[in-house]
Amino acid sequence: MDLTKFFEIVLKLKGVERTGWTERGVKMPETSSDHSFMTGLMTLVLGKGRKLDLDKAVRMALVHDLPEAILGDIITKENWEKGGSMREKDKIQKERPAMKKISSLAGDPEILELWEEFEAQKTTEAKFVKAVDRIATIVQAVEYHKKGNYKKPVEGFWDEKGLSMIKDPELRKLALSYIKSLGKKK
Amino acid sequence: MDLTKFFEIVLKLKGVERTGWTERGVKMPETSSDHSFMTGLMTLVLGKGRKLDLDKAVRMALVHDLPEAILGDIITKENWEKGGSMREKDKIQKERPAMKKISSLAGDPEILELWEEFEAQKTTEAKFVKAVDRIATIVQAVEYHKKGNYKKPVEGFWDEKGLSMIKDPELRKLALSYIKSLGKKK
Image 1 (tube, one colour):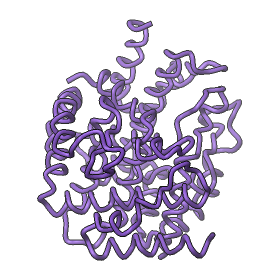
Image 2 (tube, chains in turn red, blue):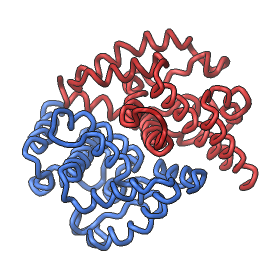
Image 3 (cartoon, chains in turn brown, blue):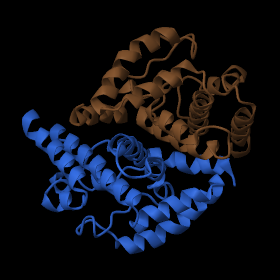
Image 4 (cartoon, chains in turn brown, purple):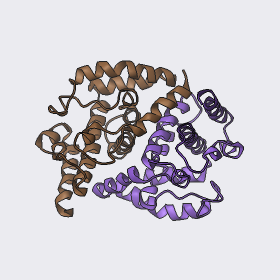
């Protein structure tokens, strides 16, 4: 356990620009810490009243991208065939040691456990946080689209394929209604 | 309840540069969402094993700065006599309607309740999150100091007065050990 080192590492998330945006020429893009905050907050709000362990889900949302503090934001081929540098399973292999290090520096094995649970995508909470993660990204993509802040189109996040990545019907409906707000405001 | 509007508002936190840094000429400073993420994560890590409702504390950390999405980051005279634009109690009065609006758009009265509890500073969780909020700010100040990213000195965050704002002895000790790491690395 070394909290000083832990703080030093996680601080870096504030400077990790998300590759999904930089690859599309977004200026001053959202960082990993921006995204993790939004995923945490949205998990809290959207998870209310659902049959799940909401507190576990919020914790999971907060830690789900911590490896990026060491490795940066890796796009997988599953997420974007053209831009992805590796397969999802290879990304997980690469991120695991980083996560072990961070969890150990924090002196908190639960951080690693939550991340493993998220990546395994077996539990209700893991699936829920993954869907919220996606919605948080779509909401941001819509914002960049509205502002014209992109060089390559960002619609891929909310086209049919993008939306199909949200498995939960209720959450997919929510994402869709957000996307529709685009038309009204343009 | 209007989640589309809620998302649109909270998104703005990614662009709210913290006044404590802009006033001191820090370039590309931390935003409110960066800070809220770090406060949430640190609450999770530092709160483990303490006699408190950790999940309530994590939720509180996530929502404690939400009014800034509407009002921006207001420095109080209590925090910085020279730069503060109003007293703490006036800031709370100003922020309350903003928080009511955000909580109502989210369809979640707990958001407002958590914020009121934080601002009242009566409960164990509120006091703990306030201390962590302070530590997160000190950790960031140390980083800017190390990198020389400031025009006016940032030491005020961790001088005697700055540290005295952390009431919990264990957390004050932790902050102190982080500050000492400054000497080793320079």
